[in-house]
Every structure is written in C-alpha cells, then in structure tokens.
Image (cartoon, rainbow, N blue to C red; front, side):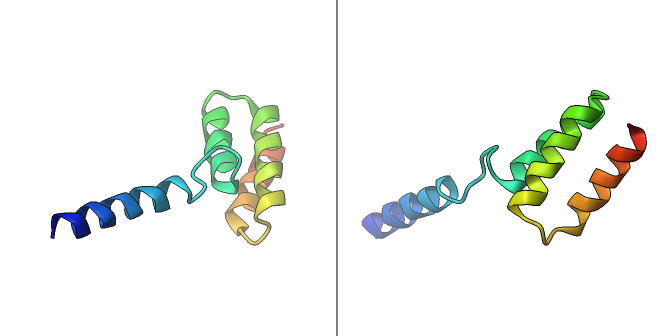
Length: 73
C-alpha cells in the first residue's frame, strides 16, 4: 500500500514537472506580459504576447490582449 502511494505521488510530481509550466511556454509568456502590463512596460508586454501567439496561435485572448497593448502604445 505504501509503495503504491509513493509511486503515485512520484508519478504525479513528474507529470507536473514535465508539463511545461515554465516561461518558455505560451502561458508563461502570457503571464509575463500581464506582469509587464501592470508595470506599464507596453513594449515588453507586446513582445511577450507575440511569443505567446507564436507558440499557441489558437488562443483568442492572446490576440485581444495584444490589440489592447497596441492601443496603449
């Protein structure tokens, strides 16, 4: 029982670690753009949003936020 629980716990940790929650993912670039927007760094936010769009072009919210950044610029 303890072995199965330990194995399942380790498997869960590995899945989370390998799921791509880093900055080099579309979501990571999107979160970074949100931080930059809060700091009024619109040029940096635009660059991050373009990276997010390049990595995941099917997300409409990336395009919407990019348009809002362009308006702010």
